[in-house]
Length: 387
Image (cartoon, rainbow, N blue to C red):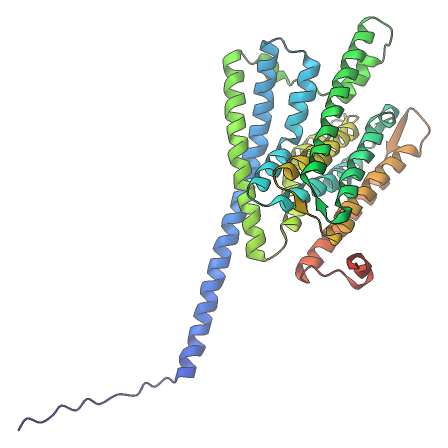
């Protein structure tokens, strides 16, 4: 008779609780590794996207300007339509593709964040380096239009929603602004050549940027290549930026508006910041205020309008008061500081620059606080969230 085999079960020296405790650190390590990888890839996409976008926007402007010159287009039209578009191309492209990707709130944060960055950071830093001189002629057209462009989206958003019709109204506004600027430019040049208004040519130069030297020296073939590949790279890099920004918002579990107000806004404002700082160091910063005003008008109308036409979006009360309200506050401060001197030019000195930079730091601190406290306001600002 065969002896039956007896299998002896050996008891593990580790209990179930010990196994779970040992597995927990491994799971945490895996989660951290996944988080680190995701945030790193998203940040690299945003950084690389901005580098390519800024470079391609400049090449597109040079190519389109050179091509227009070859076709005999007046330089004043090139300055308004091509160079003017190029300075706001980063914001516009990011706005379009964020809306197409279903993230119109990213465009909202980008527009208001860029406006805030333009005044408080760019003009603030520039004024710290060298005083800014504001032409009194800006009060006739640019300042009233700037206030209208800021107030329009705020009024539209008071019901918590910006519709397609309201967005189309913003696009009509910027179209009329461009047409009026072209008309004024032609009129000023015509009067200047006739000797009837000696300063018109200077005013036109203040309001309208000219073609770069590189654009003037490009031939038809190079201009066409610059225009085509510049546009292609702008499209690709904008999609990369939107992807990275949305991923950062998902990984960190924060609002897309916050990403738009911070990372995207600063990134799209880098060309203006670089140009203003270089001009200030060279002692040639008279155009800084005029360029920032034009950029903010474009952000409030074209950027928000294009995003809303593609995909209408909601605006929370906190976003309206905190971000839109701060944008209006900075715009009014620029207006009031420019009016304080009753001369042909107003001087914005280092004290005003320090004030703007300080307000920007305080605003960024508020955004960081709200991000760390699940979008909750500090107690002394709790009235903002009241219905």
